[in-house]
Image (cartoon, rainbow, N blue to C red; front, side, top):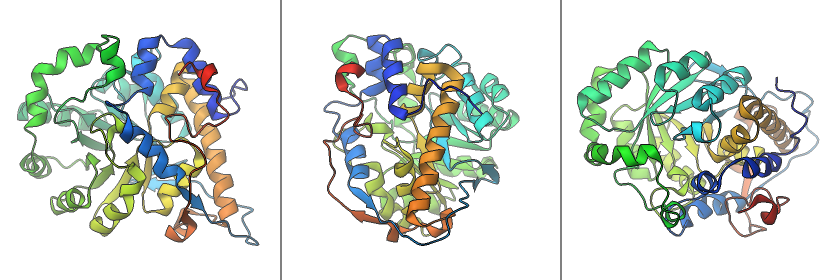
Length: 362
């Protein structure tokens, strides 16, 4: 258990990260594509859901644990794949993996972060998933699948919403290009050419559970299930790919209906609070991915910061469940939420109204 009394609220990680990160890396972290509409809609969709409390129920004991892919988790969240984590703290994915395993949640390791597939796995003995950007042909994919299995990963994820690189104007305006984006342009043709035939080939050849990350419609969710994909991962890349998309949690009900129990459903996209996590569980998600939030914690205080962030989230989830009258996740459902007007303008930081934007440097 982390013991860092410097951080008692989630927005404090954001403030500390802003102090430590240089402006280029900060904008890379908080920014999104073009008008940043999709990113804002992630928050708008979450902020437009109210919770329906129930009273006079015995909620003296609440179980926040979950079982995912046969592994018991302390909380139904995962630390989502983020490129170049070493930009935020020198240990990169190893620091994040160490924190995730110590707390008891999975890390989903991006193929474009350091210290790489094997070294990150060695630092993260707990549950973990490897995520691949396809930058080569079949041999490239097979090599990574073989290595992920050998390193003990519990599942293998293909990101499927990056057929073309987006225009992230915060970076472009500063003429800032991350090193791995500069080096990867030649391999983008492979990602653009990825089809359902490649999914079928993977399923036919490899026994490791397959996650498709970047599903954003009922139609594609149904096709994924037809191909035997174990996990449909609802995501719009944190608003960093297609501009003017829908908010991630807005997509969840149609995906749940299309999947019809044939696959597990994970989601990410703007999740920053315990109540956000509870909302996703109410609407049918099994696991919620955190992205920017844990990067703030990593930049603020390294591995211990990530653990401290997870402990605060755990407390928020437990309180929300208790006030909903639920002691376990199977008591949550669509009946626990209701449409409501948001109380603030959607923003990358709208989950933190006590964070003064002048302080954050945003």
